[in-house]
Amino acid sequence: MQAPGDLASFRLNQGEAAGSDTFARNTRSMPGAPRGGPSPQRAAAMKRWLADKIAFQRDPLVFLLARGCAAREALVPLSLGPGPVMLVADPALIEPIMSAPESEIGRAKPARRIGALAARSASAPSGEALFERRAAVRRQFATGLASAYVPQIAALARQQAAILARAEAFDAHEVTSRLTLRVICQILFGPSVLGTADESILVDAVRLVENDLAADQFRTLPPLPWVGRRRKAEARHGRAVVMHVVERAKARAADASVLRALEPMALPPEDLADEVLLLLLAGHHTTAAAAAWLLYHLARDPATARRIALEAATASDRAGELVAERLPQASVSLAFVREVLRLYPSTWWLWREVRQPIALAGCELKRGTSLLISPWHMHRDPRFWQAPERFRLDRAFQGPAYLPFGSGPHVCLGMGVGLLELQILALEFSAAYELRALDARVGGPKPSLVLIPPPLRLSLRPRGLSPLDAGAQHIAGSVR
Ligand code: HEM
Image (cartoon, rainbow, N blue to C red; front, side):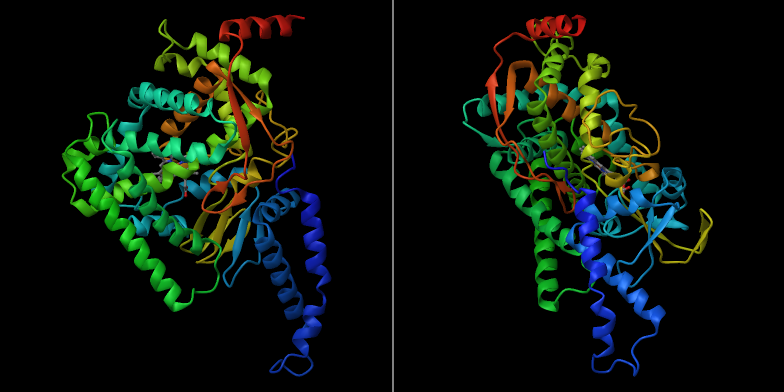
């Protein structure tokens, strides 16, 4: 597989940018440039800015990885826009940054924008009522309750696998986007509450909101006024549609659903819709992207897929249904999921903003400084991981350099659900089917709101051997 974000191509990019040495010369000959051209310091600063900007826009993943891995200092200054930006290169700084009081270090774009869009949702940083709401959702997602979802998620995964077994080939991300949407709709509303028409109305509405957020993510200049107005209007329309669907589905919501968990708070319709919108925004594509890589790696590593098939057998009851209480012991599938999230952390960068002057790692940071933490870099830096580019299950997925779900008070609200969903997918698909990757080489992920997988063409066929036979073979193989 082609290494996504490889360093060699970054050096090339850097070389090209540095080679555009003509910049200083050109600015000197620009109309309006001061006579004699900019001072050498100013020219050097502009050259650095241009080099960072070009390299970042060309490939943010390559850029962040190269800068993070080459860092000698804990905070690396980046020239990405008008304000100061620091890349956090030392994992020991993550906890203090993420857990700092909001008055000192708060959330920056785009996290803050998500909060603003779903303005009344539990993602807003403070307020007793909001904390109460967040607690209700957390309770709903706590491991015990999340396990109530096991039969639902397993049934959806099984149904999907059976459909795929009849197809010649399929694209992993297309399939996991559909599947994870159905899962999250069931978690929010309950099984069979939304019809497929409502689900697709919802997904279109959420896409309008996402488009608005994604367009803002890499932009440094304001959009053209009419483009900005059109996108805002579309985002408002998206929110209104979500509210409409929620209002219609509310009365039918199942007992073990997020809507029911929020019911005692008697939220106004807008608040309830914002809550649903936030969970859809935060929980759908993050899981779908990781799930696509999970299927791809199962296809690339049949021996491990067979071990997971054996694990599925031991984690299931006599009727072949996964037993929620046995899943935490299913260590191979869990390590598989964690390694997928290490290599492809859906949330590949996290932004925080300094709200009042502070000293951090010997640097005086002024108000407005952006702090950029990149799980993509942290998870692939050879100083923190042995052979980081290799897919390996024997890693300790602990420590500050591993943060697929973030950390601190804003740690992922749906972490338990996300992990459960991915583990069930690995177990259900491996138990009965063999996956095959149809392309010898695949591209790297594309950075957007989440890390979007490239086309991953796979096929699926029923397993020739029963999981127990497969397990016996694996054990015999490892004894030999
Ligand atoms: C593999 C799947 C997932 C990944 C990798 C992931 C990752 C993350 C990360 C890194 C954050 C922290 C953002 C920050 O600090 O700025 C976050 C926050 C959040 N996630 Fe997830 N997430 C996943 C699945 C889910 C699911 C399934 C849900 C809900 C059903 C969810 C709901 C949320 C919410 C509501 C927040 C905001 C929490 C807050 O602001 O207090 N996530 N997620």
